[in-house]
Length: 571
Image (cartoon, rainbow, N blue to C red; front, side, top):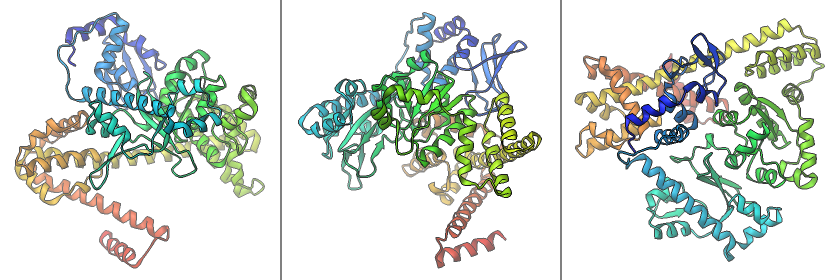
């Protein structure tokens, strides 16, 4: 949809950007402006600035900038029209649509619709004869009918193409079903339902829209769980299962429990602990932590009490502390998880575990010391270095100072030495990040330049198409653009027509590439240097891959010979 500029101006005039942004992050006065840690990238020193005078924000670290609408769009991870509607409602402004967007927004709307259809389809199947075994399993696990209804749990039949057939009858195309991750195309050209013979858990976003599914087998076959693949509306790194139900409880109770999966989360809710969410597995991400931070800065991690759960908890601590979130660790006895523990001991005992939850330092020390003999001086030094390394992610300086003092007293090590070790780790980490950043930008700039030159010079385009293949581009986005240029060349169309076949992000990349290469007076000559740089990068990647195989003992005569040849090339 296209919204009149007058309406956009009215929204910006009525809403104060400082007030809006303050709901998401802590803004501190800085002269005539406000500063904060940027919510869009990781940083230790505030570089995010908001100007109340100009009603704009800008991050000097990652470059994010814009007005109040742009901020809400980015932090809520929604489209521009959705951000406008959200803010217009708050400002008491009615939206008049000048024209409908038949592209991305329409496609997303269809995906949301077909996912909701699939949700209803799966729910009906659970209540039918073909779902009675699944229903019996759920009831046996203590998941009552009201809980089944609350979480919209369903059943995907074993048949190959039941959902697909029913959806097509309702007018949904195979293209939309495939885009939504509900079906896939086999090598022999048949379409098959993605979820078959599984208990279905719909996954919803903050607005309560179904964005994907998790499917669990009835028996013990593997994989036990599968999730919707990445789609235009489903990105696993942004997903928090149950957040639509939990968000108001989290805000009200000012704390959130983080558990591992569907059954744990449902058990929490069933026992009256509604301020809980689940990660899909134990792979907590920065984006998930940022979403939770909007509702509460107090998190209790309640992963399984086994080795894998402890490892995941350590990772979760690092991510949460980097975001300045307070963390408590609920120690589930080994061999148990929140689901089984609540089933055996009930809500009261679980909440009692929260009252005696471990602080971060005690938990980290207890987990790390299992790997070291602290009676051996050398082992003790390694152990302390490992603990200090864990502290590098802490953003609260007062908390850090308190923990360093505690380590010093507990292990009889001068605070000065611990601070020195911490500084050394931070320098090493910073150097590594800078090197990786430079290398990453270097290869990105190379791909960007090649694509830009191909679109500005016919001779250069022909050279690139004759010398490069899709797999030469390590970045999928540039690889996709190159493929489309190649396809257009085959059917005799101009490369400029590519703009009409790209997604919004790809169009933005292309616009940037064209702007960057405008400085070249002889694009075709410049192209050769960028192609050579890309080939060297690929050769280095192949060389390192072979070296890794040799280190792992996965060698054979051909691998070894290839490695020796590449070694001679590099020397």
